[in-house]
Length: 421
Image 1: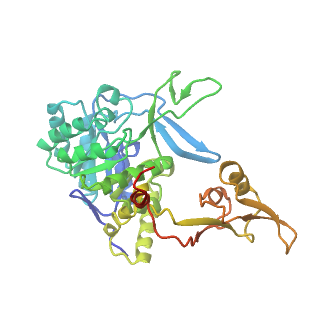
Image 2: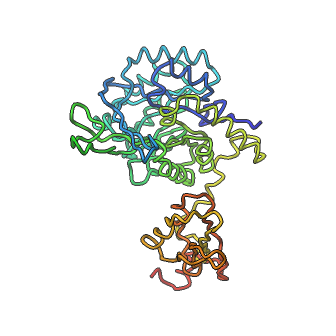
Image 3: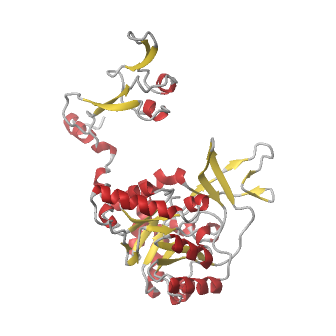
């Protein structure tokens, strides 16, 4: 069985699965139950001021019968007194000294205020601090959260303030509500951060009730933009993790967050540069015990790959990510339909006709006389759309076609032509 222990910026935990700062880490009761279930760490729901909230708070995004593909929330930081949280954190740490206990913090952008809360929280025995520069709603309107995270200079400055007094590692949590997350990640490093975490939630409006015309979730007939999370945001989060992992000016350990629901998701984040992962929506949907499947699945995967430690996965796919200009223009794939497993639903034909390149024909099978679908491979551009809409796994494969042409990138083409046009 592989070694699942990880270290993130000096913080150790017995496995890479942490609970993200969110409702599941709001109380000592919850974090204790999470640790009993097997979570390697927990980032306590953000502490700070003021401690107010509204009702209702969540909106769910569903597609067909699948619920909570995305979750929107307008909940703010903890609405429990700081002293109560600190007492419970101290108790949890005593009972589970081997687990990573991290305090998420968000306060007014005042140097002395940051100093005060850092000292109080570290006195409770936490292993590290996660600075919330990411929440897009509620607190941001008051100059906190994403209001800081959208300005690299503020990120650098407030990280420096925190590092002036912090004795435990400082993780800076970044907002995705920005054009290029690498700029704020670099600023966190300049401020002295020991690690970064991403992503926080994405600005969103979950929906509108078409009978009442009130956006959702609403509070007494009025609504507000909120933070979007859950499986639907995973591709966005994964890209931002990869961008920061590949940036030589950042060079910080990364805690990956955003739509992670299974051990497979976790492996993807690790391969793209994360040292560990944080989970929230999946726990809100299915409960703490999903970590059991995550641990078992990750262990089995590592054993099957012959990998001794989960840390060996971190960043292994980063060098395979490039820019468009470095892709081989002469590499080609084409769709091929397996007529044995095709159910002739015609979804691929319709998609190809209406949304792609019209290279699937409906022809008569000379052996059976039945109508089958057939790809004209010479005309297929390899867009993948037919395989993506096909409801039968394996019925459409994308086959590599030998073009007989040499490897050539856009950069090569520009050099050859002497012009970018």
